[in-house]
Length: 322
Image 1 (cartoon, rainbow, N blue to C red):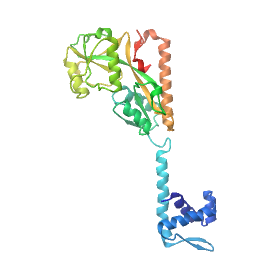
Image 2 (cartoon, rainbow, N blue to C red):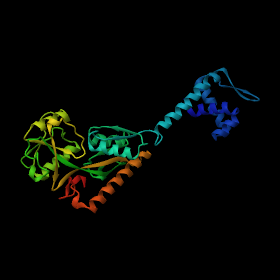
Image 3 (cartoon, rainbow, N blue to C red):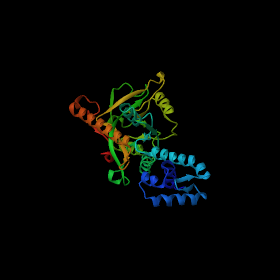
Image 4 (cartoon, rainbow, N blue to C red):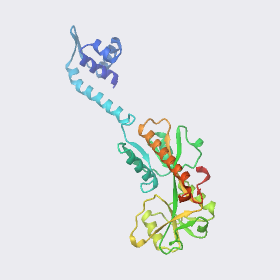
């Protein structure tokens, strides 16, 4: 149904004349007449009886009027649902226990009035495709390709470097160490069954292992975080990597140890990905928020790098992230 014609029908009813409707809609009186004639033809009924004192609703016109008003209200609700700023900002965070989930929570605490819809997609390819199609507004991901190779209209900026830690059980050789170097990990078993070939996180850890001469084992099925922690807790030989901001909970008897990695500190490069033509005002707020966070972090590192554990001995990230 032509909603312009419906709007014209309602305007005639409200204004009482075709001339009044033409003024309120800023169209000619001839256009008003044509719209009404087309609407009457499509409905197969007469909506008005033309009288000297003005158009009067027919019985069919009276029956149609409340539905016409409902159509226009529905049109307004439909438009409002996608009007910039009227819907929640939809952001992919890869995992709610991982750093991106915390980053989004920090943003919401800084902007409590901003409505957010957090989703979890599989990998960077899926996230970039969803950003490009408009299915999501933004994503936090490691981006393994140069910015010039992103799809047209998709932009990315590195917003957060997350240091890695070594996670061991109480009987591991490094269990009592305050920190370890990447060179010390050569010959030790690093077990990460959750690495999936072709994903951005697999690319990161493949490059990390190759750069420092150790092996990451991916054998065995990935049953999730809790079985992984149980295995690490009971093993004197296995360890795994976790992000510093990854939220983990384990029973006290597991006595797991999170150990800093130094000289250099491997950092996982989280980037914010979005479409450049996305008009959602909360997206601009999100980008500005993380630009400020990264600038403050850079300032702190510059002011006193000697006491910043993350910069002691330097940091490492893959070439594709630089």
